[in-house]
Length: 104
Image (cartoon, rainbow, N blue to C red; front, top):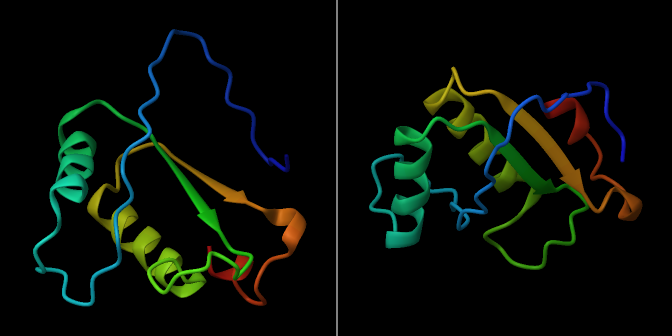
């Protein structure tokens, strides 16, 4: 685990693993029910965001490319600018696509 910050936990908290949100080319595109549920939870619950991404380039499907994950991250950060935010890069042992780290 590589971390530049420490986050002491001084109170009990609850963690919700929400369904994934897909990048949409049209920001007004209709989202599926699970995506809507995730966005509703982010909008209405007092939440922090832990955004987990795979920047190794081996996610395996066209909906999870490094580019899509970075674009979606930017869109969500813009939509929820006041939420505490933690970026988590998984699979760093597999390497990170060139230039991805600088774009965070």
